[in-house]
Image 1 (cartoon, rainbow, N blue to C red):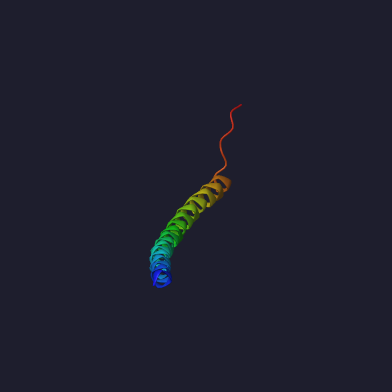
Image 2 (spheres, rainbow, N blue to C red):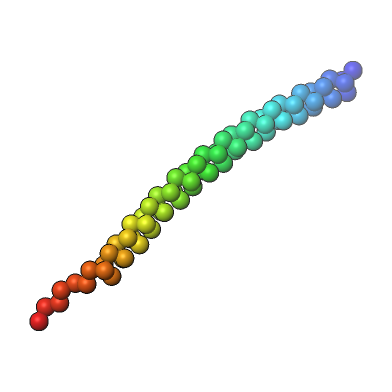
Length: 69
C-alpha cells in the first residue's frame, strides 16, 4: 500500500511540474511576441532615421555651402 501511495505522490508531483512548465513556456511565448513587436518598432524607427539622414545628405549635395575668403 505504501508503494502505491508513493507512486501516486510521484505522479502528482510530476503533474504539478508539467503544469508549471506549461505556464513558463506560455510566458516565454508572450515574451517572444513582445520582443518581436519591439524589434519591428525599432526597425521602423531606424528606417525613418536612415531616410532622414539620406535626405539631409542629398540636400547638402544639391546646395553647396558658401565658402569664406
